[in-house]
Amino acid sequence: MERVAIIGMGVSGSAVLLAYVKAMKSHPDYQVQIDCYDSPLSFGKGKAFREQAEQAIINSRTHQISYDVDRILDFKEWLSSNQPSLSQESYVSRGLFGQYLHERSQALVEASGAQLHWSKVQSLTWLPKLDKWLVTTSLDDQGFEQVFDRVHLCCGELPSQDPYGLQGHPHYIGEVYPLEAIPQHLNQAQRLAILGSGLSAIDVAKYLYEHFTQPSLTFVSRQGYFPSVRGKDYQLDFHYLTDAKVARLLAVNGGRFSFDQFQALFEAELARFDLEYDAFMAHYFLPGRAGMEMTLHNPQQVGLMQAILLQVSVVMSQIWPAMSQTCRRQFNQRYQKALVCFRNPMPATSAQELLLGMDQGRIQLVAGLKQIDVLDQGFKLQTQDYEYEADWLFNATGMDFKLQNLGEKEALFADLLDKQYGQVDTAGGLSLNYQTLNLISPRFGEWSTLHGHGLLVNGAIFMNNSTNKIQEQAQRLIDRLVKEWQAKE
Image 1 (cartoon, helix red, strand yellow):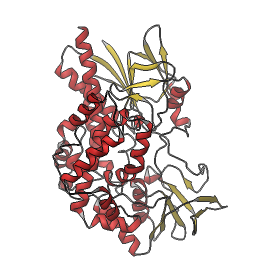
Image 2 (image 1 turned 120 degrees about the vertical axis):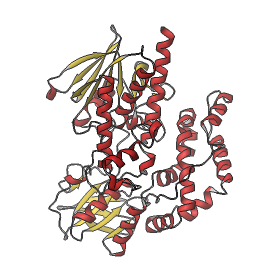
Image 3 (image 1 turned 180 degrees about the horizontal axis):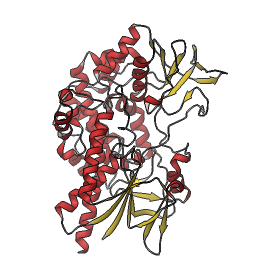
Image 4 (image 1 turned 30 degrees about the vertical axis):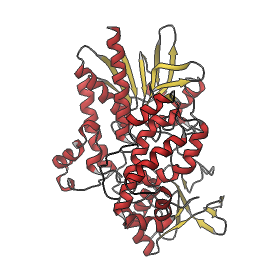
């Protein structure tokens, strides 16, 4: 019987365990012995859904997110049973979804017979004579060691970016989550600035807005764009942006896919819905308050484009690995900003709260950030023609997918890179073969028994930050492993 380690039991680890449970149920002769590693705090939740502050809400509607994409209404049904007062809400807190995931993950552990270890994995060691992996936990866990045939890396808790090298300053909050850890002694006389204007920055602003008396909040960013506001929910029938269409083109072109081929598919799909990309962007992709208001008040057109761009991120999973670096750059230059803005929208309630704060003069946005200077008790933020001083600075710029700021908490990543078991992909995260989900080593080539999942491979897998997408990838991998097992029997 194969011994399998799942390192990290957040969204991606639970997805892998779910896929194994389904495989063993469908194929009773296929059995594996599974060990899962995580902390009690993160089990079933990961970083994304252990946040307890009510201001941090999921940006997917409750009927569109679940622990099991094949049972997409399961969370909605769980809400009806456990939180009936919220069962009709379109959006709920991330903490509540985390509670649901924790319960479902616990049930998966029991169903699989997996051994659960409350331990932090410190290192992996390849044992070539045995063709196995040695998993070693941290010294805090007495350096416990076990040997496995296969390892799934699901530990996507990457370090935060530190784009201005401010880590260590006493008034710099380098990691904004959990929100409840934000110092409570901040007062109304202090000027608070948030680096970034994405969904994490909005979480911080909402939390500060509700928990501190009349704070002065300033979003500071280079570009000055907020996420779009989620529009009408469309279920579209796609003709061109489909996995089948992409697969046929890949087969015809020897596994290659060009930017021009993608653009032809995209423009043909847009034309079916009477949309033209440049005209839409000129009208709706606007910086600051203008963009927020425009997308808030036009839910039909905005929702249509959001649905199409979501489908783009789906088919790009196949297209991205088949693109040349030149084609990837062309794609990013033309479409990346739009995807970030419209694929991950904010709920309308969040936009309304921000607009109210702006109307009251409590919230502002400063775009075009060029430089940050450190002062004795704070920071000076400079744009081309503006200077602003802040007493506290909150870093909401996102994760460091280039893995440049690895600290003690990221010891396993540092160990993998040091031993050359893995490498940082040019697009971020660890490199892997998309078809097999096997990690790639600059020293050993493609591993057959070391797999990457979730945010850890966000880059090699295009925008791999959707719970549904992460589950689909895990299921695809385990289905392949079952087929390989059947071929050997």
